[in-house]
Length: 160
Image 1 (cartoon, one colour):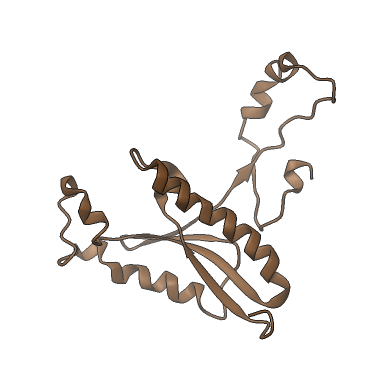
Image 2 (image 1 turned 180 degrees about the vertical axis):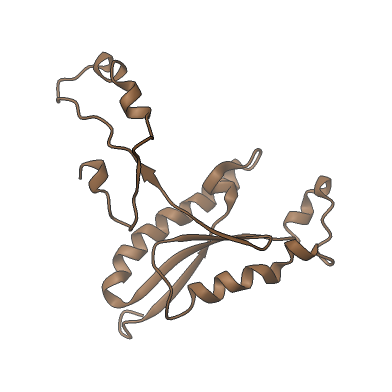
C-alpha cells in the first residue's frame, strides 16, 4: 500500500467496546482496541493515501444467535437486522471517497458515526496535590463545551 500510495483498511469494531455491553468485557476490550489501532494506522497511512476506518456492524448473525434469549435465527434474519444492511457501509469505507480515522455504524438499517470528545479541562502546577484536582473536579467533568477530536492525532485539546 505504501508503494502504491493507495489503500483501504476496514477494521471491525463493535458497540460492545465503543459504548459497552453488559457481560462482554473481554470482547468489548478487544473491539475497543480496534479504535486505537485505527487511530495510529490513520496517522501512519495518511501521507500515503491509505485510509483506515472502523466499521461497527449490527445484524442477525451466527454470533448474535448464540444469545438464545434474543430469539435470533441466523438462517432467517429479521428484515431490519439482515447482514446485507451492513454492506453499504463496508462499500463506502472501501471506496475512493472513504474518509480516514472514523467509526461508522451500520445497525439494522441505521447508519451513524461516533467519535471521541474532550473538554478543555484544567491545568495544574507540577507541585499540585490531589486536593487541587478535587477542588476543580467540576471543570474536569463538565462536558458542556467539549469538542470532537475530529482527526486522528488531533490531541491539541489535550494540551499536547
